[in-house]
Image 1 (cartoon, rainbow, N blue to C red):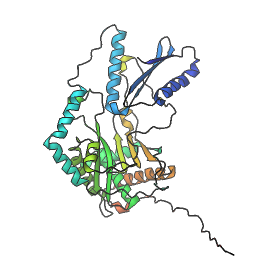
Image 2: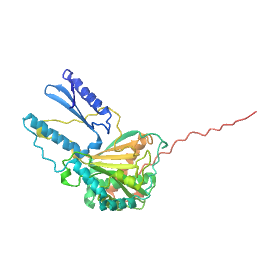
Image 3: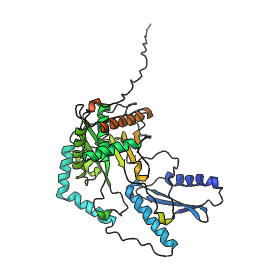
Image 4: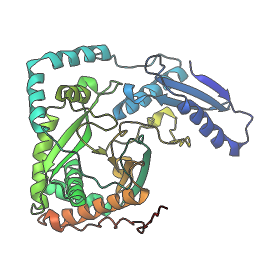
Length: 386
């Protein structure tokens, strides 16, 4: 049962603070994977006819699609109870335990061996990305930090125009531009990034709540004389090959390749996520509303943890807006906010120029170089003995 809090005696101007405090208390409580619960609810009674339901789920039991499934099912239940009837939920074709058994069978099938051999060859000797850091790597723990930029509607339209013209997708155009930027930043030809992918590959999985996600490592060669159109075609091929072999769980693959390294993400140092799904919302007929609440807590470790840089792009047209919102989640123990801002701006520069002129070579794309590091003046000390 959810925890219940009565805020009916609060003044109207204090209600928002009470809701935020309720959310903060809920999400600040650590979740233990060995004990649970991994799904928590709290109800705040604001008035006799106004209640706020706060939900908190661990990422290990959910994904983006699951949130929409959950809100739709909850709205159906609310409407049904309000009308004095049972919810008209459609029975699931498969249960999550069936999916677990299926995944175990996949890993034991001959096809899994072929997938593993592909990844073994594709990721053989993949190098670490030589990202210049602002602070020594050392053994400092990961410190999650984040910077955000908004790229306008013109950028989104230019990306879509190039994607449509060449038979590509937003994801491919953005990924190619990111790899071009990383090449300019590091002068490293061998660039590998990680990206989350959905494993909801059959219709029966669409109404499921669960972590139907995996991570794949996409490795490409980038050279200064390549034009952007050539790189984009190369990225499309690599991505197609990788997605067709997405069913090997990333952790299983890392173990099979023996590529674990304490304190660092295996196989890649940069991640990229394109979130094109609209945020979860209630059906209009339910009479319910959904509002995003910032509990005012420091960001917690999540899928981006241990990764030096993770770029997250949300296409604002999914929820009626325009342009892109671009987040860079980064290791604050290694990079400053200024470096994060510069990398975001460089990605935007590379992308805007490349989509306008795909024939332009990677080595000539505009780029703001890292400012020279300040060094302390040399000090000479003389010792004498007597």
